[in-house]
Structures are given as C-alpha cells and as structure tokens.
Length: 495
Image (cartoon, rainbow, N blue to C red; front, side):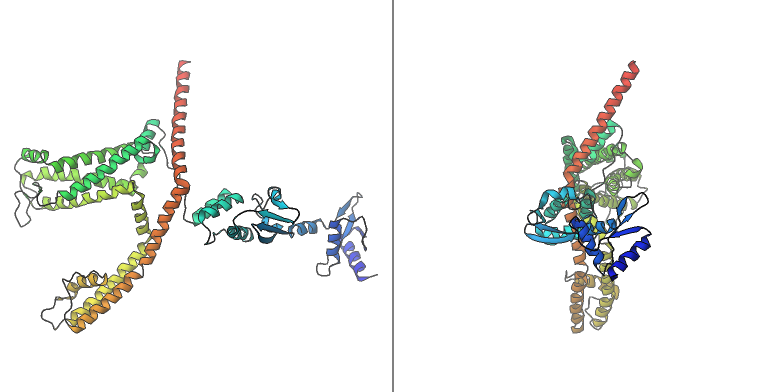
C-alpha cells in the first residue's frame, strides 16, 4: 500500500464511514472533481477526496466546504479603461449589495473572450474603490480626483447611500437635520415666512425688508454721531465735567424726540425688529428652545436698548439720576451696534466666520498667551533699557505694555518709541518675536476658515436645493393633511 492510500484509509477511518477512494483519473470526473483531487494529492493541504455513504445509502461529497473555499479564492480580473486590477471573489463578496459584490449585477460587464470584467470608468478613482473592499469599508478620495467625479464613481459602483453619507461627512459635507415645523397650519406659514427666506417669494420679500432695516439702523447709528448732529437728550444742558443734563418737563422731552429724524428712524427700525421677533416667537415650534439660539438673543439685544433709553430719558426729567443717566445712555447706544450681527441670519459668510472663531478658540487663546508673555518680557526690558534717559516715554512697565502690543503686531503708531541703543535693540527683538508669535497660530485659523467655507459651499451644492424643496414639500404636506382633517371633521359634524 502506498503512502497516499494509507492517508486516504486513515481519513476514512477518522470519518467513521465507508470510503470509496479514487486513485486515478476517470473520464467521467468533472473539472471540479479533478480540482479537488489535486488538492487531495497536495502534501501541503493534506485534503482527501472521498465520497461517504451514509446509512440511507446516499452518497455525499465530503469536500463541499473546500469547494466553496476554492470558489471564494477565485481571482477576478477587472479592467477599468485599460488598467487591469486583480482581486479575489471573497474580497468583493464582503459587500454583496454593491455592483462588484453581486455576481448577478456584474455579469453584464463580463468579457468572456478575455475572461475579465470591463468598466469604461475613471481609472484613478477605482484605486480607492477597490481599497474600499480590501480594507473592509475604508473609503478615501485620491488627492488628484475631483470630488464630483469620485461621488459619481461611488454611485456607479453602488456602494450604498450610507457609505456615500459617511464619505461626505469625512469631506466636511454634513447634511443639516430637517428643521422642526409647527403643527398649526397658520403658525407654520408665519414660521416659514420669517425663518426660511427661500421657502417662497413672500419670505424673500420679508428677508429683503429685514436686511434693509438693519442697514438703515446701522447707518443712522453712525451718522447721528457727526458733530453737526446732536442728541439733546445727552448733550443739552450738561456741563463739561460729565454731569447729566436736566430736562424740566415730560412735554419738553416729547417735543424734542418727535422732531428728531434720528429718533423717528430708530423707532421705525425697532418696531420692525420687535414685530419680527414677536412673530417668530409665537410661531416657533418649540418656544423653550427658541431663546437658546444665539441669533434670537441678538435680536432681543437689538430692541432692548431703545426702550431702556426711553425710560432713562423720561426718568431724568427731575434730575434725580445725576450723572448715571448719561453713562447708561452711552452704554446702551454702544449696544445698538450689535445689530450688525443680525445680518448673519441672512448672510452665510458671517456664519462661516463665527464657526471659524468658535473652532479656533484654542489657537486664539495660544496667541493671546504668547502676547501676554511678550508684553511682560519686552516691557520690562525696554523700561530698564531706557531708565537712564530723562526724556523716555516708558515711565513704568505697565506704561510700556501698549508699546509692546503695537510693536509685536507690527502696527507701530509712533507715539512711544525707544531712544537709546539698548532700547532700540530690545525693540528690534520685539518686532521679530512678534512676527514669529503671530505667524504660528494664524495658518491654523486660516485652515479652519477654509474648512468651514468649503463645507458651506459644498453642502449648499449637494444638499441646499434639495433641503429647501423638501422643507417646502413638508410644509405643503402638513397643510394638506390639516385641510383633510378639517374636511373630515366637518363631514362628521354634518352626519
């Protein structure tokens, strides 16, 4: 008995069945049986080809598992516009719903003459597509492939919507969650009118009016500070030491305000801001979360100073408030300048800047920290370097802080400057240190801005129009369903 027969007999004894072994090639053997026989004769694998006969007399193939493994190890050749790739079938089978993973889907691209699959697609992109199968789900766009082309390849090879969304998120393109809409149809119309400018032509008109009022308010705030225009409420009757003016009667204040064009313009603007905020609040789907929005807080801040200023102006007629009223009015007038941030509701560029600053807080903190260290070091150095100079501008270390800030930021007003040789040396080192200190965090901030800017642009390109359309459709569906419910209710009432 040869060694091969001993191996087959021992395998049959371990199986506990009667074995019928084939030692030689028969003409009736199929290609699959020949392939399995070669595996059985291979000393490395030590697989025995045999057939077992169970108690019912049914013949079964003991090597069906090996056959399945053999089919999984089958090498598949993929030709992408002349560039050949080779992989195994089990690699593609990891994602059976995709084009390459489903044998039924990919068979239409099979070239029987060359025994390969041919795709007339983008060649550089297929490197990442094949790596997606090999790495079990890692998809990364090659740097030399445009995003639009790569997304087209993902859709063609049917990797799935989930994989596409994950890829877009990795590129910074995030689809915003659908906004919540009020259930009441009337409130839904008001909410869409004031909150979503792209939902209808009426909403666009409201947005244009809102932007015009904001610009008018900011321009008025700036023009009324010109010397030829004055504010009697703050200036008339006051002396030079900062004490507040005294207006004798309420009628005098009312006459003065009613004839002031700036006050009239301010009143009209505030009335619009208050109306807009009130309409959005009463139609909000969630009034508790309404005040959690930073934009709504800015809207509230834009109208509060007006009413407080009126209260202070009428309360000071008796002169009891003293100099405090003038300081309060100045602070409130300063708060009015924050109305410029209301434009961020309509202009996405300001939102991008806000997101950039929010993401760059660590870098900005690092910049301020470096600046504080430089202030202490160079202010101390220039103070002691100029100590013997009687005409020095640096009378103390805190007095030199301003010079250090201006010098490190390379502004150089010239109001303070060193005059001695050692002082000029300290100033030169301060300038060089300032350039290096500011240059270190700035590229990170620029990178954050570039990320959020392209994220906004790409998101608007891929999702913007679809989101607006879906939002309008959802609102229309909600209104239609509410109308149907009303009709059903009327019919039931009639019955």
